[in-house]
Amino acid sequence: MRSIIVTAALALAVTASAQSVQAATSLFDQGKWQEAATAAAALNSSDGFALAAEATTAGAALVPDNQKKALFEKAQGYAKQAIAKDRNNAEAYFEMARAQGRLAQFSGIIQSLGLAGDMKKNLDTAIKLDPKLTGAYVALGLWNANLVSKGFVAVRASGADKNQIVPNFEKAISLEPDVAIHRIEYANALILQGRKAEAATQLQKAVSIPANTFWEKRDLEAAKATLAKLK
Image: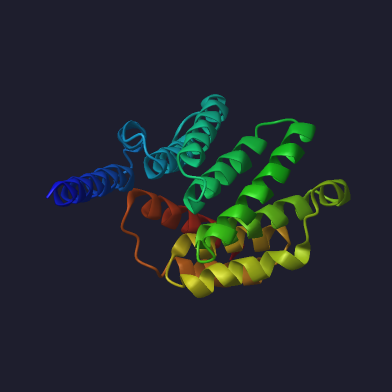
């Protein structure tokens, strides 16, 4: 009888946790990133901290530049807590890598190259834990594209490879062909390589995909603006 009661209690706890994550995700989808991050972190779980990291990194796009670095550092902190709670949580490593990638943009050359190395390790770990984690493939494509665009020194120091740009994006798109952000980021990577016609093709496909969340609608408007410049 006791085992039945304990099992039932655990089941209720799991359900409540899932519902709480869902509630925080709903706030995030509405663009209420601060509320989402607070609610997610309060769950004190690996999934909660990973979501808090995602919301904080995304929210940094909406604040002045002088506030961005602090938010990326905060997101990195959330991701560290997510990993500490569960070292097999692929999303946690991915969110760590995403925060590090953004933070590198606001760091000096030496520090940014160090962050790039850590980012690659975390993305590799995320994919090892979850081979279908599409965001990690997109991030790897961007990682290679950004470093290759910086020239020989960055490539030599990081091990970035221009031949790994397209395969990573194609992998992500094969897994989730109807997710616009994958194609938008692919276009950004192609633009870095001077391949504007191919970038326009990806953006045209991206803008035909329905946008539902606050972030998807924002990405859609950015994609339309970039596409207009390419024409």
